[in-house]
Image (cartoon, rainbow, N blue to C red; front, side, top):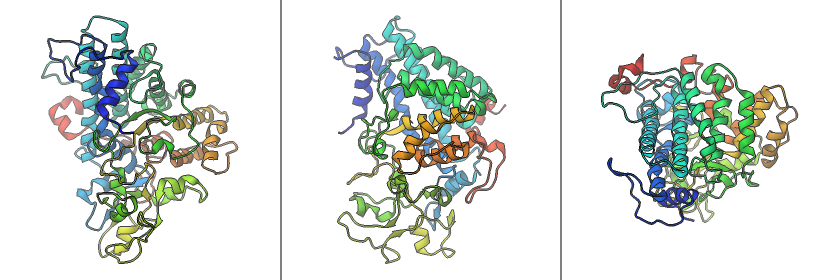
Length: 495
């Protein structure tokens, strides 16, 4: 089923608004002296807040890459003359970034684009004559703005907080404490829950998406404010778990091409290879000649791979190991062995990277080109192009099973009932009295490559420690610095 982004966002939002027919032509932007005249136009006005999600999963916005490459589960190794790129991938892995690193710059810009766009929409909606539908749309966009602020406070800590775009051109907002931003977000989302639609719509801020966002905020409250909120986190997990979401029987079902009907996905980005581009993890990870396996019209870039020590956390009989990773002998779509173009040998991907930086001369061409298990968690469909048509799940019900387990364990109770359905699906033995250490490892195995690992390692107190090719670091590396260019433009950011 093909997805056209404007149809998905616009018509799904219209349907949720109770409007089934467009009486007039909608427009993407509204002049300052003209406002929406009906539900269709009101809904269309909100679309831009969602479109800002597009850049999150690749280097246009860097959020997904920064969460993964900086963690202990995935890396961007230098392969001879390939993938050094000024050291930006190595810096993320070794936590050597500065306030002028590409990922630091682009994440900040992307989050603020989402916040600013949302504020502009909210300001306009508030000038429309009040109605139940308008109030619901204001709530929806305020929760979307809160989602962008959640990403901002999680990654940068202290930052400005603006609830309107109606500010003077020369306005220079002050940076405020992370805990204050947290309190503001929680207040906004909780205050809007009653106005959000109680729908199973994966592409809009529904009431269930609001519950999920609050569960994430409360789960990380100790990191953000110094005060744990495990009970409240558990309560909002319960609200999510009571919704219309269930575990799939197939571990890969939530990651298939055209996965919009997955019963696990709560809130997602609707990527499409032609109409909503921006998800290229297969290109970044697969071997140059993996196009022969998947009959792709383009050749992948032979880059990212699994961190070897993370690979070892999977048991051999864990079906996620063979489902999520590409390794071992490689074959064409017709079943013939692929011959590696440089080594002249059959292409066999060794899951163990020998080093993060593999210089020519110090490592063989075989080591440089064919080591490190590659990412196929997100289905690479036969004939896949440079961009995937897999929705990216920002909130998935399986995560909330594990979050609920965490809130139970942290309050001295047993979380096995929430962990074991996931382990049983993976065909590994059930836990009996799971510890936090076991839970963190299980979160890693299940949620690999979904953008959660950095946050998890910080919450579990593991972020500052050393791991494969990454030295121990101090607490300041738990957040990224505000970009130099942003401080130059507004010195208040640096105070």
